[in-house]
Length: 247
Image 1 (cartoon, one colour):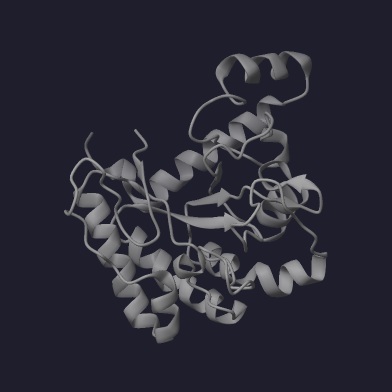
Image 2 (image 1 turned 180 degrees about the vertical axis):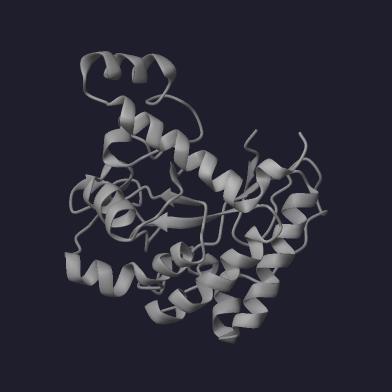
């Protein structure tokens, strides 16, 4: 089974308080400019996630620090520099996944503020997306990251988790991401497999078997798209070594 757990700074264990390592924040690691240190940071977190029974770490966070008062800047590994994010995302992903734990690059994409994050629309043209916002995530893809998480916000008026331009076209077709995309918790607004979303979290309000079956019958969703989503989830687990472990 897939056993996910938060988050970008370490294992959230509400059942066993005071048992989790207080790892340095993503922004702290970014300020080090030290790829070797980031690799060890990733390995350490991955080892703890594995030891506590999780095979998906919901991190690292990779968004750029574009708004100084963003409440989640501390989580993100890129700081203000897309190239720094590109370089540091790679050792972080390799470190986590070296422990047979699937890393999760988040939040895709332009999730640069917490204020009104549930309804804000980030108006960003193609060139700016590719030159400023995508490089940290490109680094994660080059490192073989197994999963992405799409964000709460809209992008040019369309919800991030059902945006065919940024999900299906940019992420999967242009950047060549091979893994799967899960929604942030409650960020799904439709049965959006055709737009590039593979997995709804944390419930199945839009992507349960009945709704998907109905869309298949109506020809709205194709069997090929469903198969692709399943393949991407399995690819992440096999490529990282999750499937090598006994249940």
